[in-house]
Length: 262
Image (cartoon, rainbow, N blue to C red):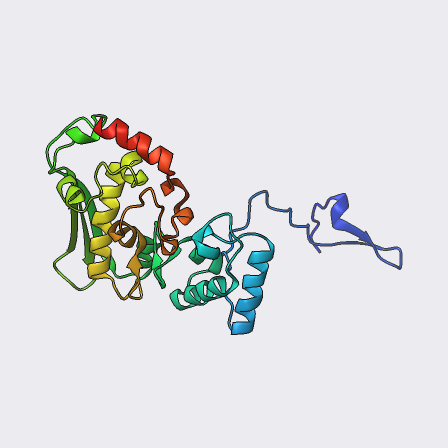
């Protein structure tokens, strides 16, 4: 029998008193173990109801799923349940899905980056590009001085198809749609370039990947198509509180309107 060097930790005392060498212990790794994130997906109506009840009890319900879509109102339990079921249809974890779904006018819509995520997850995108179009200008210039031809062009190529799906949106089109320099469209005042990009991307996504979006409309488009909020307030179906930074009071809107138009 060959001799092996062992440490104190490698030796145990047998009941007979004889010392026996054992294999050295493995030292614990000082790095995190990589594991796949597991999401809980309700499989039955009962499980979905329990999930909805838990979110409501924990006060983790997005504003869009509260009564009237208002953040200070109590959660709408039936709407939360329907939202969770819609998440199951989309195969998206409920809490992730509820954060990216917006109920408007009796229909669910996707908004924010969830629309792009659903398309990218589908594995049907072979390439994509996003470029600014129009003449060069100073982006810090007042909105009234932005060139009408400035905007974004977004292209998505679908697997197996040679031609891309193209979405374009410019300042001229935003003006035509009543979005540009509108005091009651706060995102278009605060993030105009990002909003132009979002609209261009939405066109390409819907045209080329309606199957990945499961036929859902994109909420930013739907919101922009609704009449702007005026002094009388928005209709209850708009749920603007869900888009927190898009909410604007009448006083804020009047002040912004006076600043924009002098």
